[in-house]
Image 1 (cartoon, rainbow, N blue to C red):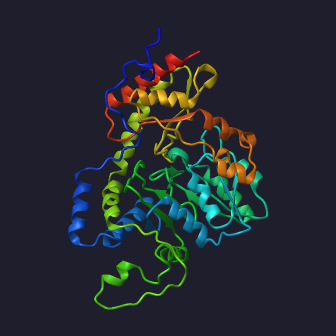
Image 2 (tube, rainbow, N blue to C red):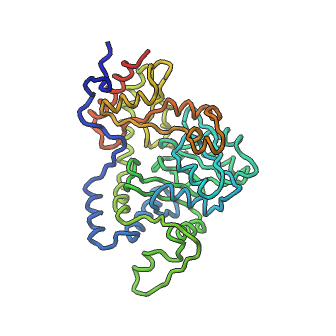
Image 3 (cartoon, helix red, strand yellow):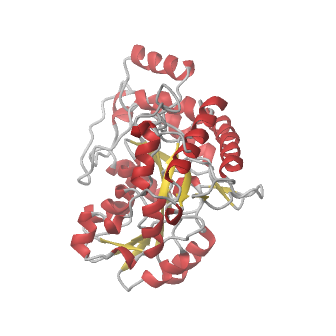
Length: 401
């Protein structure tokens, strides 16, 4: 007889909620923030510059521009590449709304290309099918921290004279064939949102090796001014700024950068802990009926999945519950499960504007209906991880056919 679920009145697996993606800040981050507050310079300044320099060095890029979000970076990437009305940008449907929304913001059309059922990243063969004479940019999304098939994507882009803008919101520290994500394309965008592997509460970074793009990004990211605040005020010599383009308010603050500096220095430690927890999950879930692990992660020493997400796919034919019911049951067990993502072509805006049907992108639809994400953060204990496994087992047994 299966144990009664907490959602049906039973005892929860654990007393306290295990949060999904809780940030892990230590004494170093706290001390740096206090130092910044005491310094009197809390907006964009010396610590933002230091964070940019250290981030560029970490990924191996020439330039890094700190922003208030990854969304800002994706938007500016479209702007500085001249994407606008009449243009098309290819994106995967299994991604956060921002990936496609920024294309709408510049007046262009996001065109979806289905995902690979193994990696859950955009499928290069589907990219090829989606290209038209209006296509200008391809936006691969490194889903969950898994690098996309960048050799194939770059080959397609080169053959059709297209630009590549990477959405690496999940992928700080990820590697592809010996190269760190952040160096493979003209522009790569990272997220430092609260639940990301590196958190500044809110924030982002765009990297590039192109000096001309770096200069454009710097101008556009702060009101289109010819000189930013730090350049204006850190010197005793007066210098007047001029608006040279109608820019945006996308800058990062030194308060955020104070967190980012130490989060960045801990990334290798964080990734190693994520790998330990994921290995524990892998072994436990390999024996479960009703859940399917996603593809094995690369272990060749050249490529690296950084495990921003640990996802399972539910075998709904073997369960008496939908994915949403399954997650609700886990939440009642005090396990902070989540879902990444409901495919964009099935969201009201894109469905209604472009007339998409669910099976226009069948792989994304199937994954979107069955995918769930489990807590995986470096501060989790072995007991926390065991609670996750126990709760999933409890729900699977209760809902199994």
